[in-house]
Length: 235
Image 1 (cartoon, rainbow, N blue to C red):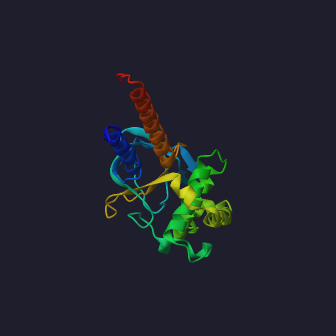
Image 2: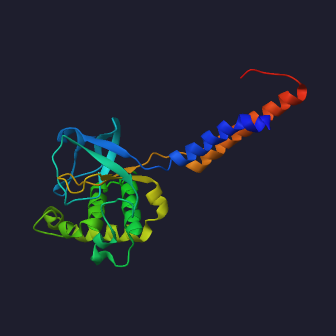
Image 3: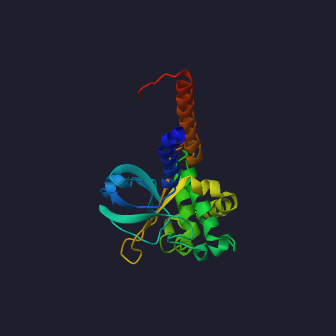
């Protein structure tokens, strides 16, 4: 029983680390001047990844929203969201030309798939960002006299549609788990840009939890061995 009392705080800490890693929260997204944040120009628009800071830490973000425009430098508050819980778009926004019957989660799976492709060194990263916009802002992407004019002039609208269709077929929940969605807290303001960040590869939360438990088991074993031998040891 004494050993159990000693281990309870450690067990609690391990459990809290598992819960905290899945919590949502509010962050501040800050954009420097346009020459510092946005250097990729593709087919008439500045495409991602863009260089910003999130709570003061440098980060690369990708925009899933073509229709909302703004001029850096600027900052806003955003929530870490998930499909169905605070994200800007729903399944109703998905380009009907790409197919029907997609859920909101499937649409974001596809966006996550494209975002991960963008940061993997793909040469056509600019077109991949256009494909993300094609999923949620299809009317603008396919408007040959508007935002999509340069894209259409280069004969690439069909290519972008094909990339988006492919992503809707291939995107999975595993892709979505590899990104973070940042939705502005005030979608009625002039700033409505929803952003995606691709998470750095790391051990899963469950694996970290298992490592914590392994450490607790080692400590317990040490205490038992010391107790059996009648020795004491300061830690």
